[in-house]
Image 1 (cartoon, one colour):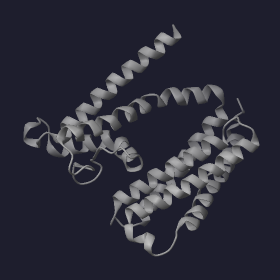
Image 2 (cartoon, rainbow, N blue to C red; image 1 turned 90 degrees about the horizontal axis):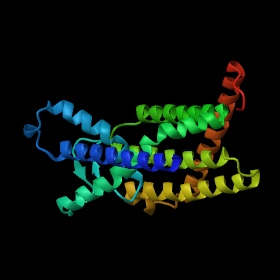
Image 3 (tube, rainbow, N blue to C red; image 1 turned 60 degrees about the vertical axis):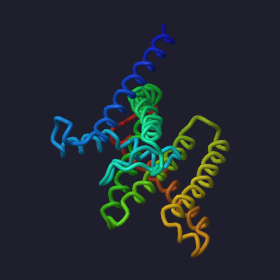
Image 4 (tube, rainbow, N blue to C red; image 1 turned 30 degrees about the vertical axis):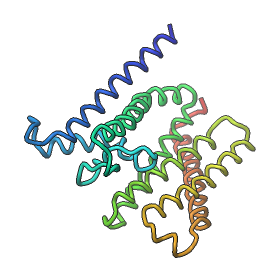
Length: 240
């Protein structure tokens, strides 16, 4: 029965994700004069619903329509319409399905450990505050590049936190976090070089990026641990 419910739930999520992705795609490619909705409203709806898909496309090699920004442009300039639709759906459906499973993951974490749930919430809050502060302090000359960097930082920090907060042995966790840091620094250097192609001609940036990732990962983990301790002592949250 449990397996049947899991399969049925997965099928329903895939169906809803496909319908949502098709709706966003239809709103994005249909001329505004053919949609019985205000133009500004349609633009906001498309950007909000497609935001997680567009952010995922900034990091993954599969990219759909970049509708977070001013125009509904595609990353594939010379692709046919069918190819662009396939790329969008191939990215949007998995992203929506993962988001639909997010409440289940939160409930599972809460049942496993309230302290772990608190740790996740605190870590996400710290990341959100730092990201918002970064966007407020920087200019808007290349918001697409800023979003891609923020998305990659989220992947690196989430991977490092998942390993560090797992139930693996201390040695395995240390090795895992080290691997995440090394690979994350390489991905960060590659991404920055891709955003600004001429930057690679100035000097090798990997060591600087490695130091930056080490500071970012260690800073998030240590600050999360500190805030978690303060909150748990204040609210008397136990380990279970």
